[in-house]
Image (cartoon, rainbow, N blue to C red; front, side):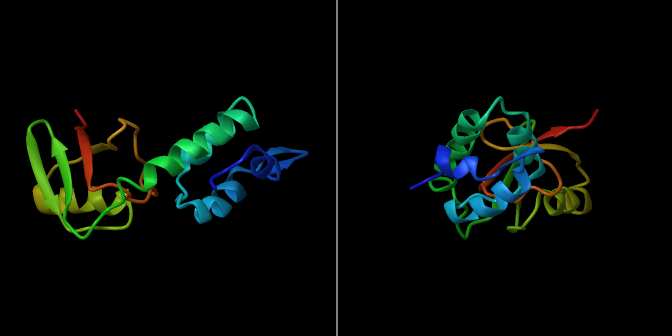
Length: 130
């Protein structure tokens, strides 16, 4: 059973929606915290929209969960293989240190990833910074 409307409503407070607590509790559904997800929950029109976001994220974590292979980062026709790391900050640091490339990371759904986002895919895309 994934996130439900009744579950999401438990994070509504007099001051608004507590996206931090919601994402912390959502770990039981296989979701990991990220600033981007917290912002998406804060900007959602209501709990129904939040549940749709959470259910979508939960559905995407299972089939694409990283295995023991290398992380692949694609960048304008180049492909960089690197060891698995925990966060996107570590990915960017490795790319700069080893390959002398930097940019903004995106996942397989073309969603921008931020430094504190956890790496939950085997393949990422790098958009170079001009």
